[in-house]
Length: 167
Image (tube, rainbow, N blue to C red; front, side, top):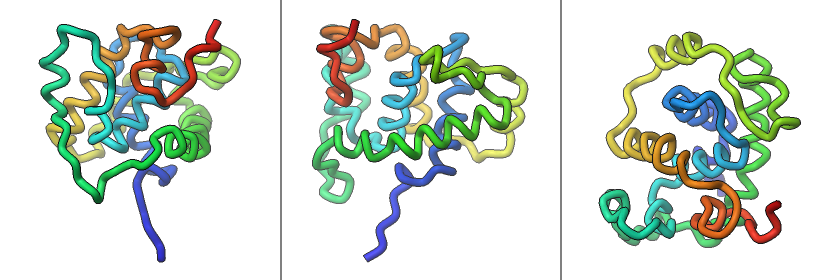
């Protein structure tokens, strides 16, 4: 049986990364943080499983816990690791086109080169759905301000990556 999911499609991953990076207000984003963002853009129902900080009920209420057996992710860490080759290939493609700096692996962060080129690419895409737009806005603002490493960091709250051995 052949099953397709956009999480394992390199071209759709490029599309998701362009959407995320074009809405990023900061100069750069860490590689692991961008991968986490891409995971939640591919699986929006998983946003309800994030452990949010206390006092952020408004963000938590945007993603109610509804069970849909067709969108269930059995083990989010395994799926996240299976997405890694597609994500890294998509990032390499963006670097080869000159959209991001090529030294992303040595710096461990993605830096946009040309904002105008991102804007021109977005003109070719259809507008995002409200849900996708909300996810991207929350990821590039609220989750950008959250620390990535350590206890109560993004890696800990999402439980997608190990945080205990971070420096």
